[in-house]
Image (cartoon, rainbow, N blue to C red; front, top):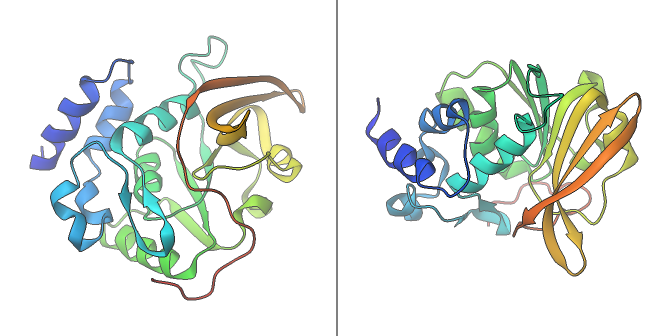
Length: 222
């Protein structure tokens, strides 16, 4: 076990809510130090979101753990035995969440709208020799229809609403997890799709994410 793993395992096991061991293992395998800016290395294993370039943030380990847990849906009785195959992430950012998901899903597809962040994340993923993450430079709110339908969709930034284009790209018995603006605050919402329609929407907790922006950003890096 790598030294960074001990810090993360201790942190996640100390959370008040249960996190499945498969998720703890996936986060323990992912060295967060590789995903933060050089000036933030000393804080890589603390449970805080950290700033990146272009006004973006890398989520805390506990947030990544909780979002992964909500996404897998082990707490949903009729989906708990399901083994989801593929996931679409909207907002690649540093690549940290995508790499964690790569240990939990056979295929991970992730979209990033800021070109410089995409190139940095691709370099990190390549250095880790991870083969099951596919990325694209695009406006993520349109989804990625070429690889749909998806068993899971995760938004890594806060939206005002979920576009029908993303709902349409969910498979049957699928889950979408997203930070959403609701009653003047941000909340994590989980949607479940069955038989071609959303059959359940639930608010899971309050949160704080950067807002989703439209379009793409060429270059960047400030």
